[in-house]
Amino acid sequence: MKIVIAILIVLGLLGMALGVWGLFTDAGKARFDEMDGLIPFFGGVAGAILIIAAAVISALRFLLRARRRRSA
Image (cartoon, rainbow, N blue to C red; front, side):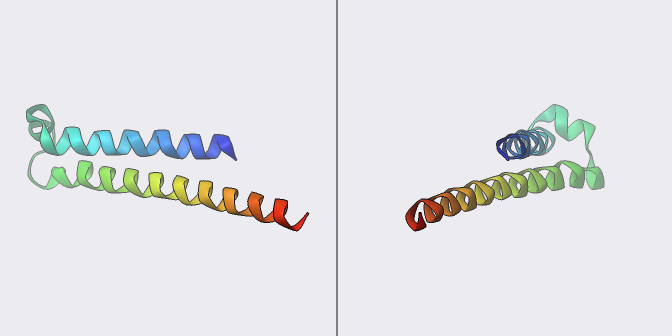
């Protein structure tokens, strides 16, 4: 499960980096003009969702592990 969380975080950071590069740099704006600008925008949103998913999975693992320790 730790590997899945790490993969989600890495993919999330890559998606957010694409979003920042595509929306806020001159090279990114030149590469993604007009309607193509939606690609880095949605890449950044998807990256944020992946990082949130990794955080939720981590929190659930922590809570379940604490619950098992309490009941044992």
